[in-house]
Figure (cartoon, rainbow, N blue to C red):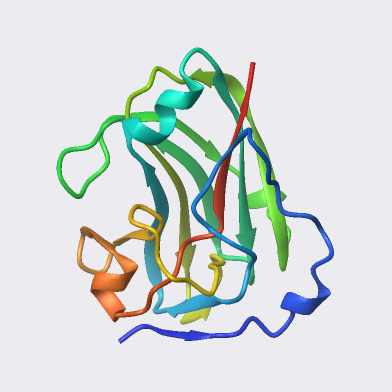
Amino acid sequence: MLALVFFSACQKDNSPAPSGDNVLSYDGANATGPVLSAGDYEAAARFPASETGAYQGKNLIEVSWFMGIEPASCKVRLYGPGNGGEPGQLLYSADVTDRVQAPAWNTHELRNPLPLDGEELWISIAFTHPVRQQSIGCDAGPNVPGGDWLFSGNDGEWSTYEQRTGESVNWNIRGIVGE
């Protein structure tokens, strides 16, 4: 079972979390992060058309996330409409391993802004742990549907974190919208 424990250095993070009307997010302030076994993971927030429709005609210009302990590798990924409990086509991917700050909020500016067309959008942070550790941040919950999707390379499946563990949280992953 995956357990939650507090990041030992969360209180040292003074960087502000992105917020406001131009932000796609389900999460609250960073509270902790899951301890995950060694392996490959993707933590994602799934925004259905009912959420992205308000931004139709605008662009996703940045992705922000909280990283508690630096992983061995880290990528920002964006996916289109999925089928059931999995994301759709990969729309964007950027290796940000060399730019990750921890413990801190991180922001990646997309090389090419992604037009928002009112369809479902998955915003994902992919990371690798060489050992059992915490990395991706989460709030204290309760879970908002779509806020806690997790792919584990250990079983090759997408599932919500709540389904995997019974814990009710949302990943600290946010999409910044602009013109």
